[in-house]
Length: 396
Image (cartoon, rainbow, N blue to C red):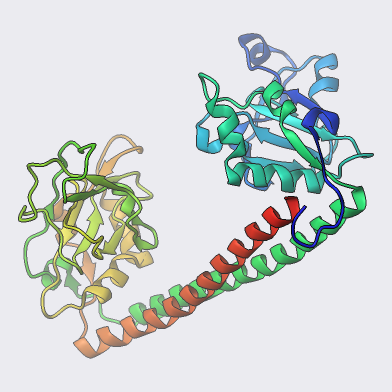
């Protein structure tokens, strides 16, 4: 092994260091069984933790309960039912013994305590997922599944138990610092939101959004994407998040869309989603250049503030709790999976429109907290990169 590890590593198949088992397949008979028992599925197994908030039930016979029962120290892995990206997502089960069972979309690894400690197995499997080892194994199959048999044959880095405990202790210490930074980021963000909400509450809400705009609200344009680079990009709806604009869903525009198209954005344009789920409709964010001409889709609208309204101020207002609640209330649609806002209703939103000086004070307050949170997030990214490098180094 590289790094500080001094123990010799032996590469043995996973099946030599623990029991590998696929879960029970859901069937009409199991759904109709008189006795129903809780079982875990892909949706319950997240990276490093198990979510018990949405657990389904099905029938298990007495013998099946012996086979598929979970015990503390078991590691559950996504077998690959959802997507290649999800393959190998894993978590330690630390609940009560025999309280939960598991479906065939998951693989259960039960470590042999004489050879492997559960926390070390979880470290190894998480590393395999992040480094793409699981995805490479699943890619070789026609349906992109990891499969219990294929998983069983992957070479496992076996080291003495004492060395396993040392590695886990080192990584636990790093993760503890990560959790502290995450908590600090959350605290700063919460303080920022509270401060901005308090300042907004003291303002007079006696204007409407149309008073703050210099031109009519315009919907975007959604042509079919091109498979090749054309010099113009298109935003996806996912670029508007609860945290504002994030260019994380970009596509190539077709050749006929020129840089002079009316839907091409300018740096600083304010965007709002006009259609989405009721929880996400009306998300707003200031567009920042993505490095090439870019258009916005039909499911977004562009709001261009007048000279009397600071775009950053208006973004804060549109992301406030009061406005978000009003936007959700005015969204129209019979399906909760897709409700819509009209430009007319949005233009009538009640907002504050104070003096430029008051607007600047609000923006400066928002920047103060955002700068602090950004600094902490940068530290967290560096620590996580160090964490992953440490894992790679320790595991060889």
